[in-house]
Length: 288
Image 1 (tube, rainbow, N blue to C red):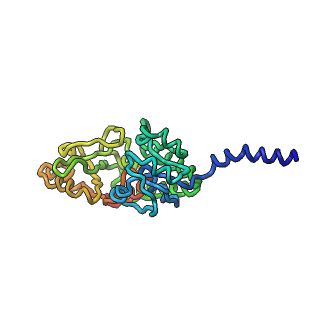
Image 2: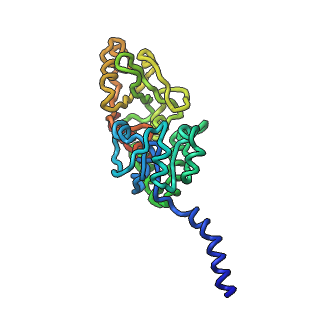
Image 3: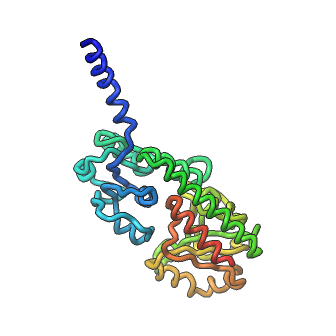
């Protein structure tokens, strides 16, 4: 009888530990990179924010059937709770107002995509590994990261064969409006600039910024002395037209030298390993 009682008590004490270590199965994603990362890990979140925006900006494959939890800026706590998640993934810059409420619903994994020091590339890898561990898919996650490493090595070799190694590349996306176009230039701490360096190229834009980019006017492009990789989705066609039709744009040294390259609209610069590989492949192809 004592042995039975001891076994029952032992099991009772072990249960909370086992459940705490159990892989999360019902995940709510408050940012787009989590949706993308779960997909490459072979999972679908039960709920996600702003899927219309995801389809427009990220334009990457994603699982269907996810419940809408509202906007990324102000997700609905009621909708999240109704999904009975066992894990909520939220970036630190979106958790300042509701982190305590989210923790009352489920375990919260806070990601740090824009670290105060280091690069966003390293932060992306760290956050991806943490997510893979949380959902019990460490092995698959490491396989994805190996694919990323292999892709960068292959593309670096292709850049060298094309005679582009060591050349300067600045990465930009359009911003502003069609009537007042502006340009986002990606800084040295950005994920895209890190990819540029890993391909054996040089940064084409100096400085650092909190979110990895700084906004300039058209005249600022005169500082680009190497190549300019312009990345934009289809909905920015008017902004691009507003920029490229200007005489000042046509007179830019980088334009006159025909060193502007356009990358497709499904090239997302703020995503996980999948988006990073896509950017590396497309940049490499554009420089050949």
